[in-house]
Length: 201
Image (cartoon, rainbow, N blue to C red; front, side, top):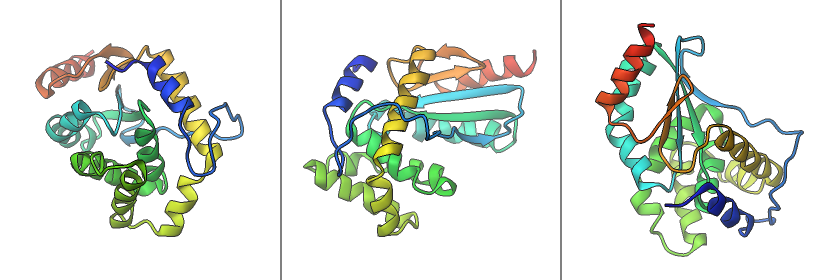
């Protein structure tokens, strides 16, 4: 299992174009990525990594039902928080965040095509494969260049990851929280039962 400590050590040793030194930048706020009803009685928070096969499985088999039955119907507030176990997960998140209006669409594509881009070869080839997803989603090469070379935002994203994952004691993915109570990788039936219980309180 890759722990949060191992992940942070890995990130600290990696670089982006422009070389990132991961440090807190108080001038940048990293927004929560949300769907559904922000004022709902129940908040479901998912911690996941774009490079995690178990997360891809969750998004293929559990998330579509969660979205159809609880997010799209405004029964819950859904928050997605990125976990950076490696540089590729961070880079994928930077591409997804390039245009907030396209975030969840790009996230879906990263998971759907994880087996392709994650095995593309050398780091430069993996980044090129992820960039193609951004282009298909409607981002321009100029937008992608700007996002991928935004050192201060990358620093703030990692700092935010450290803050939230420590706060919620997250050390594996996917981790699901329902109204602040931590669960592991739940199948849809179990997750729905927990949500229904919270809705009925």
